Image (cartoon, rainbow, N blue to C red; front, top):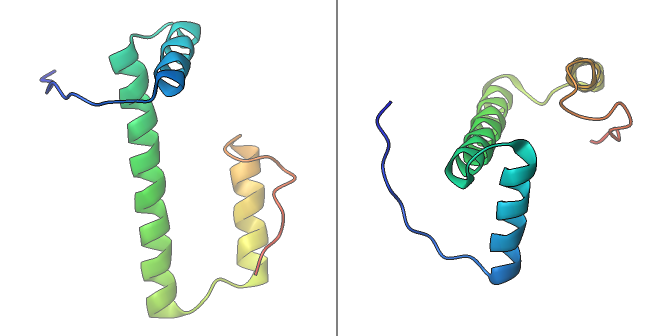
Length: 86
């Protein structure tokens, strides 16, 4: 796997939290940050896809939103207590 070195600056308390989280997960700091950033990128892509879908086909119905909440809860992605919105 090819990697690219990046440099970033973090507030000391954030840097400490990153080190602690990486250690707790058994990963290197680079591996932990890569996983977190990849997760954020996937979520952003998902939100963009949903916005595009709704722009073309209309807003999700209450039934579709409820089904999505159930599926996400079943997958452990969100808690089953996710509030119903809009």
